[in-house]
View 1 (cartoon, rainbow, N blue to C red):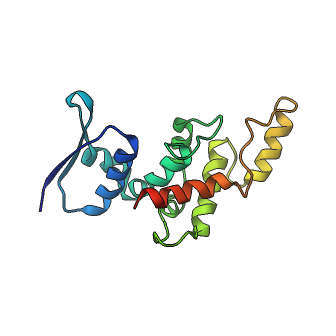
View 2 (spheres, helix red, strand yellow; view 1 turned 180 degrees about the horizontal axis):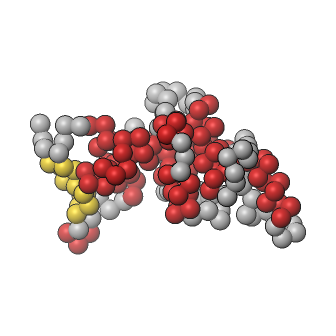
View 3 (tube, rainbow, N blue to C red; view 1 turned 90 degrees about the vertical axis):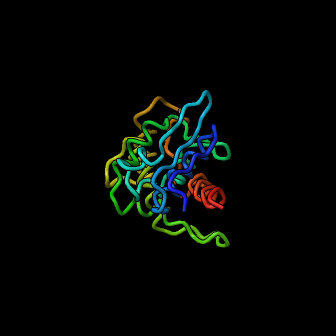
Length: 171
């Protein structure tokens, strides 16, 4: 088998998928992405400090933080969301990679619950907060009448949409 693979791409989706799959391949020593202007991105080096659990859950993180086919979260940038993601428990990070089979559209409850905890952290909530309680806190403490900076509701379609976009994107 090949020991070194070079993939030419200039799209974040491809980089995320390469990180996701490199973590589980195990038979390739080096995986590179050639970007514009002969810049090479060493996926094998980037994946090491992230670890297998984070790499395998990166497609979901990428979907929920906003990409080509999903919306970004208003008021929460990728950096803030990444910080919240890296502070999730190992169990929640693993849940973010627990995708169903491609022919199923049932999103595991563990993935939905981990997603909610991720958003609570991203919006500055405490471990025992829920999205609903955090929405109330933010509404009461914010400028009167502003809804833009509120976290999504508990039943937010955006969480489910991000999970489904991840399943489709991995095909």
